[in-house]
Each structure stands twice: as C-alpha cells, then as structure tokens.
Length: 149
Image 1 (spheres, rainbow, N blue to C red):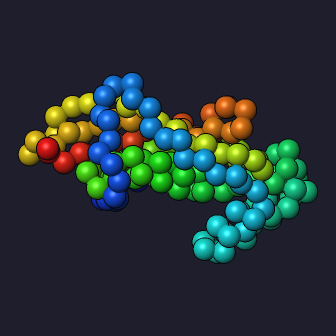
Image 2 (tube, one colour):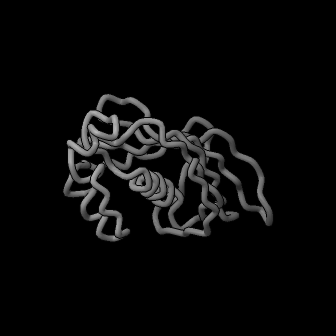
C-alpha cells in the first residue's frame, strides 16, 4: 500500500463536498513514451517498464507502467478537485492491477463529509485508477481539508 501525508495546495474552483459527488476524471494515455519520461525523472530505467519481453518474463502480459505513475495521477485528480480552497491531508492506494499500454483514468467520489478544525470541512474521498475497460487498477482513499467559507 502506498500512503502519504501531504500539505499540497492547488488552484481551481470550489469543490462540491456532497456525499456521492463524483470527481474527475483525470485521463492519460500510457505506454513506452510516458513510462520513459517518468523513468528519466525518477532514474527508474527498469526493463519491465521498457520492454515487453521483460514484462512477460516477470509474469505479466507485456511491459507495464510504474505504480507511482498511477499514484501521481490520483494526486493530480485530487489536487485539481480541491483547488485553492483546501489541501490534501492524506492519501493511500493499493496497486492491484498493472498499468498496461493504453488509457488510464483516475476517478473519485465523495464518501463522507465532517467538520474539521477552525470551521474547515474534512472530505473523505474514494479514489481509483481504471483501465480502458473500466477495470479498477489502484483503489484508494483521500482526505482533504476545505477552508472555512
């Protein structure tokens, strides 16, 4: 499981903090080009992300993307939704299905809303990435704090 506590703040419109409200989507096409750029930033040139044969040798159908790239898509989804009106308090996800070449979509939904400190609102989110077939790959959670007012 990947978990982080952050103080990320972003710009954007005020989010709808109502239980059941959908957030996203955040959509990316993935494949060797994306994975290579991500590897360059993180010095993560691992054959399973660069070569289909290496991916198959590792027991997958082909090469597959980095889990932390999906993690970054979830962070972008939540940060874009929160906008300038709040901050990400905590996020977690589990990598359950590999990111093979194709479309990855990050989505979310408001699961719970509760009062925070100093008039702020804490919003609990269900978040996930899914492949082009709509199959969840990395389910997770996030907690964001929306400023009072």
